[in-house]
Image 1 (cartoon, rainbow, N blue to C red):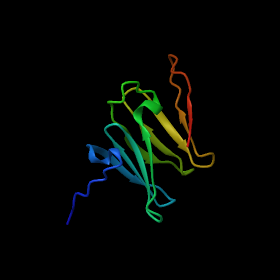
Image 2: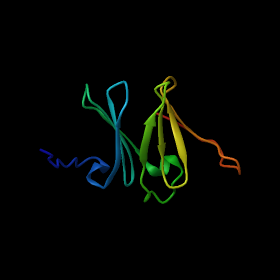
Image 3: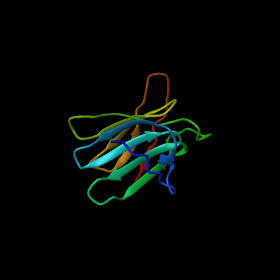
Image 4: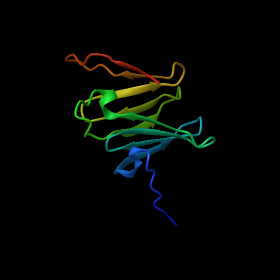
Length: 107
């Protein structure tokens, strides 16, 4: 059975694009307006708005794509791809030929 449980203090009330569990028991939830990380052991939720990832108007959604062999999580929004580096706990924008500048977002 699937139940809808609203989270009034989060943007999880919006449309969810993707859900991914990492090796540290975190549930990564990409949705309209941002990214939420739910720790399944503690219940703590950490949130990042899309504006943190370079979406100035904040209306684009975030998608969570994969966990690589190093345990890093790959995410994207409308115009950017980021890798969450598990060891440093930072988001790094992936540079593409043509000049997308690298940005780091620290947790």
